[in-house]
Image (tube, rainbow over all chains, first blue to last red):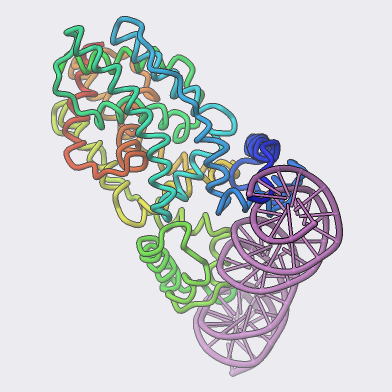
Amino acid sequence: MGRPRDSRVDEAILTATRSLLAESGYAGLTVDAVAERARIGKAAIYRRYATKQEMVFAAAVHSADLPPPPDTGSLLGDLTVLVQEIVDHVTNPAAAAAIPGLLADVRSSPELAARFHDAFVTVQQAGLAELLGRAVARGELPSSLDIDLVHALVAGPVFATVYLQNRSPGGLAEQLGRIVTAALTEA
Amino acid sequence: MGRPRDSRVDEAILTATRSLLAESGYAGLTVDAVAERARIGKAAIYRRYATKQEMVFAAAVHSADLPPPPDTGSLLGDLTVLVQEIVDHVTNPAAAAAIPGLLADVRSSPELAARFHDAFVTVQQAGLAELLGRAVARGELPSSLDIDLVHALVAGPVFATVYLQNRSPGGLAEQLGRIVTAALTEA
DNA sequence: CGGTTCCGAAACTCATGGTTTCGAAAAGAG
DNA sequence: CTCTTTTCGAAACCATGAGTTTCGGAACCG
């Protein structure tokens, strides 16, 4: 009942948020600037998102339409592709600007923390679990695997390279794919 | 010349900042609250630190008086101890609250970024380089090592466990020590 | 049509980072 | 011992930005 939301407004908000994230970073992003760039009123934003964080989350993370888990036929190949996907997501300009800020804000909001975990960590771990399951089925790996540990081993170095060392992760996918494969098969 | 700074004020600021970080987190920390808890004026804070970020940095990171690089006699032992030191630093309540926030703010301030990198990344890498040098001298490792990669391999999973997965890193030091040792010696 | 919800625009509140001012106290310089 | 400088706590002050509300008007459902 009543006038329905205009989906072009939805899209304009997300697009403006992404471009401003890339331009000004997370700290420099203001809701007024998003409204101005999207040529809409602030009320239209707050009708959709309760907080700035939710808006950023929707623009930079929720849109992480993860590709289906790859099947290259080998653990090494699968892992390398998965790492590359994480690298690609994390180096996308909007996401790169948003993720550290969200990671910080998440610590004062269990609500946002749960969403972020579902959309980011759980999704990555699901892809990883699938890929590891195939390796187990092929006999490449034993079935007793600590998925949290393997995920930390895969995603952690990407984060450290990009956010701690502030380096470009070129070539990291291949190196990390080899190392993790070796670590898992040698265990 | 003139009245010197009162070192008790210095200490009161840092102590108040640490306790408030642990209580309210980074987002909930206000400069007025620090001044009130330390029973000082805000001017005394801004006389010492240009921004809230610098204050937090001084309270939570700069105080990371890193222990000297351990020498346990083996690469496995040394790496395990180093990882445990990183885990301890990162799980200290004040630092745990501060680090994600600083990591986010760093991205809009090259000034702060450089300081953070020096006090955090460079320090960890120096300890790591020393430890690896000993292993090379003992013949445990070849001399061609990518220190950035090894650092990402060591620090990354700790970050992923604590900040992404939001889990307690108990037992991680031993597991990670074994895995990285294996990865380096099998390469 | 009538009621409800949307729209952009703009005004508003409130919290907070950061600056400045105040009178007073502490200390080095001469 | 006195003058000058810098500190001290306290409080007023300013600017920004998140979030709310109000407005006149338009779009849609029943």
